[in-house]
Image (cartoon, rainbow, N blue to C red; front, side, top):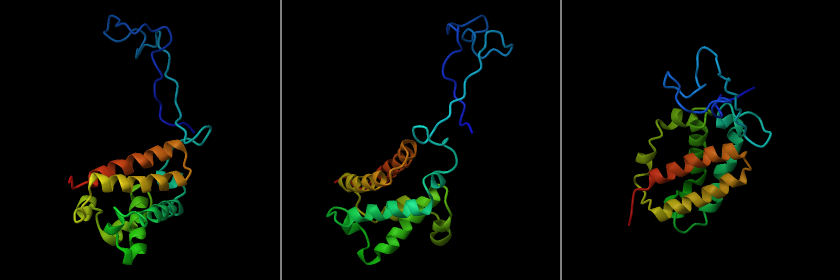
Length: 176
């Protein structure tokens, strides 16, 4: 199975200088003269790993992986004096369920979150909380520890972490 096809560079022998048509010499010629077909590149989830295809939800192990991620995250949050007060101590299991279901849905799993809670509306749901850059950084540290605990393939970890980092920055709503 091969992944996306990406050209690696100009065809062998091409100088990169424009020819009479304005294109780089030997590149993209439809008559086949001097053109060397681009070689396919397969993106893999780890050294010698499977081709990166399908949803992240499926690639990393589905619901059990997201449940482990969220439980590990909340283990850290419960001991954090900056952000723990924002969480419902009397409904920790509910918070765990909501975050796990949201992440599962976002990454290609079942749509249970939206079926039971409606559109995620992350900014609206987080607006009542005073989320400062300091709180964001505490959240990110606990989430980073949780992501690393999963032992994901580097490509999958980078994809998941990139989203979590952007989402955390988007939730920041107080700068005092």
